[in-house]
Image (cartoon, rainbow, N blue to C red; front, top):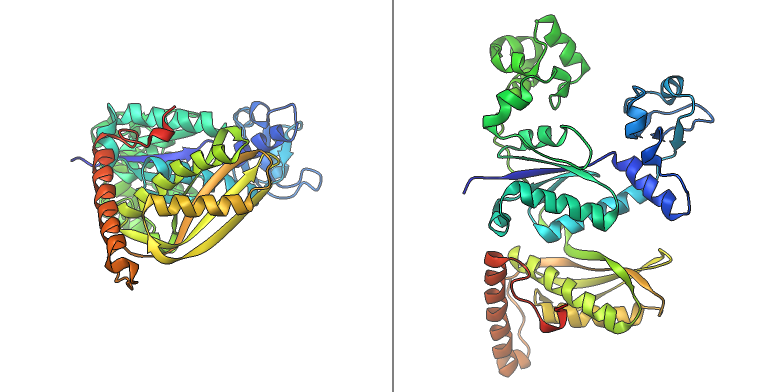
Length: 398
């Protein structure tokens, strides 16, 4: 099957996330709709622009320029200080959301990642339809927008996501390079910085197409190994794959922001059941099992609490994870409305690692365990072929 890669990039991430937080706190003006930036302190006129709104871009304000320069271009510019704790939280929620759609994710920064769409392609009519569904789902779930670039090469997917913004999907397959990418100025090429642009301009190379058609040896003689990389990128040459972070390093989990606050333990259990199914499925797909289970609760007041426990035996069974999560939640919940629920597993080991048997494992309990394992494998095959909602527990039916 031909490889398909998505590059998913949050539009003006810092500014969007700060804008949403201020609206949540009662501000009447959305920073995204006025000339605004996230960056240094306008009072002291220090620092640089970390992110800008689209209206600010119209004044020629650039990311990375001093705040003093930005204020000269737009004296009534609104500045918001960065909140990196908030950005980390938003990033975590986004990556958890995307991983629940497809676990083959490579996060490359707080606000962007690659997704290997190939394993889940059969679930959708085509990649563009899938990308639009993912894009719209992010906007409806979180309130901010993303661009998604689609290609058979990582570098081209990255370039495509940088095309016209915001909230759009673009393709850039190798067959589309000449039409869509070559006419662009050199500064649009990934990793082609100001110094490289100046060097190439001195050689009479003004566009990405000029670079692609140039003699690579001439480029290398002026820019060394970086010149070779730029020439390859201009020609869409990139054999790198979507690199997954090893499960052992990060654990496996999932969380969801509820469309309506959970008010009862029954509501909480129903959500935990769905999360348990998702987490267990991802553990089995990674051929891992977990010793530790953690439950996170965020209340409508935005207070976040968590509780974890270590199991006597590692598991990737949804039933065990669900029962443990319910126990943790019952000990943790204070009775007030719940906005977000999450389950995370850690202390992972290979599912084929030797297990110390107890007396119960030697009899009927061992038989039940093997039957459950066979059932899980059958369920995973059905969902892999027909989608995660092809078969589900009756209690999860709407």
